[in-house]
Image (cartoon, rainbow, N blue to C red):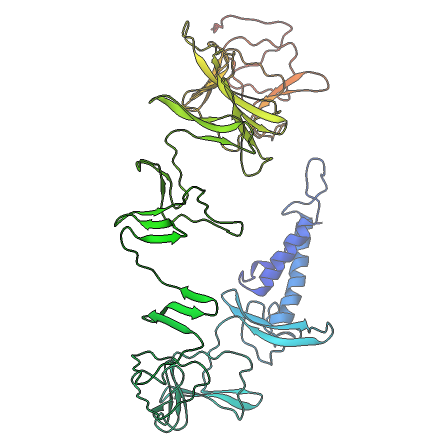
Length: 547
């Protein structure tokens, strides 16, 4: 029985809601069916009776849905859902309610949303409104809790924050201008970043009171604490200081008399050839205008004691001739004669040597460790340099070359690296300006060449790789992407793992000369502008047309 397509389907407006619902329903119905194929001859295909039934069914559903939502389909002016806002937007005719959450924005950017969260007690729900963009109020007043809190007058550009009580809690108020309390600056209190004024007069405090410009006078004064005089002091009567004396200059105490003697806290200016004696022996002498001698007769000159923590050098320590600074005041050292370093009076660990101007240096007798005493170590001998960590070590040195590429009778020397570890790993690429090869082998990698011998190698060409020598493939060979069969793609020569046979698949095959086939299986034969011969045996070297 033939099925006809409903004529109203062809009259649908592609921009209408009914057409959108009809198209979606039909594609869903069609894709849910089994497609027609050689294996499934009873399947569905576009244009058959089943597809027409699905189109008519989809149109019936779409007409009913569109007519109920927007009045489309049957030509009526409205539907049962006409008062609701469409998903694609429009104008509402009623109240917008979103009592279970609301979110709004512009340009696919969320600007406003309602939220619900649980309070710190883990039970009480807290509701609120979250705004992610700027808030612009068109009016001049802001009310919170039914009371006006903020008022703005555009005429003078003044904002008023008013309430019977304003509390800032424990917050810090920061103002780069002035704060005025009262009717005006002249009749109120003004606080700025530099001063405080009360009715136009500056308030004095510890920072600006009792200045040197203020003159004070008095008859008598009894000072319970400390009396400090910055200027000159003139005494017109006797000075009594029976409880100690402190003398100095320019505000600095130099000499004081204390319970057990006199204390000098300044300098003694010693003339030339004068100094300090202990007993009858001079221990400190100013020899001339520049040199000072510190000595001890018939004994040892000791610097510091058991309670001394540090001995600091404020100048360099020089040799007896004054030609070389041995130790600088910052710890730099120079030993022009030689240097030997040992630990706990053990064997030499470090020393210097000199044979000539071209052969001199430092000798490391033991190990050089890094970071910690049990860290990696560096040592060596006459032949090689050794890098060690516990039982693992790597050696580097020079020896006669065994490369097959060395020049005959050249006596080439190779730098070698060896290790008792299992592998040598480079975290960065390894590059060579000439080639990379295997010692004792002809195998080497050069720019655009991989040599296995002088006759067998791979070379990079403009559009691929050239093979010099025969090419042997153990398993299959094919293009990067391959699928077998008549409708497949790519090419391949595949080895059957079960039978061991090899099969080749190509899109086209051209044989310029003779082709020998032991068994030929053809799915289809076609002959054009000629005839097709099939015989038990046939061979020809030439073809001659017979008139």
